[in-house]
Length: 78
Image 1 (cartoon, rainbow, N blue to C red):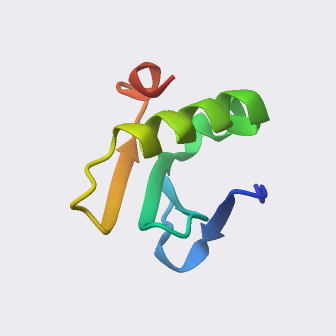
Image 2 (tube, rainbow, N blue to C red; image 1 turned 90 degrees about the vertical axis):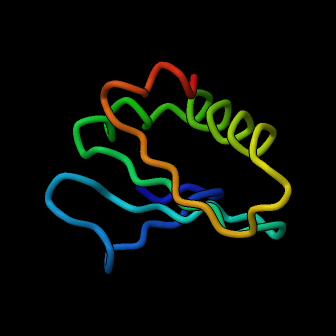
């Protein structure tokens, strides 16, 4: 999955999760997503809404952050 606002990092991916780097100039934000959720994130509108929420609610003091999105907490980010 290659979007204009996400970049897949295959070096740190495993059989259960995939790591994506959010392309942002302000900070390093990474999303670790369960592979079972990848088909749900194919919709650009849902993914953009999730990323806007994450960027808006993150702490300004953090320069680098890895956010885990699992089956259990997926609904929180939408």
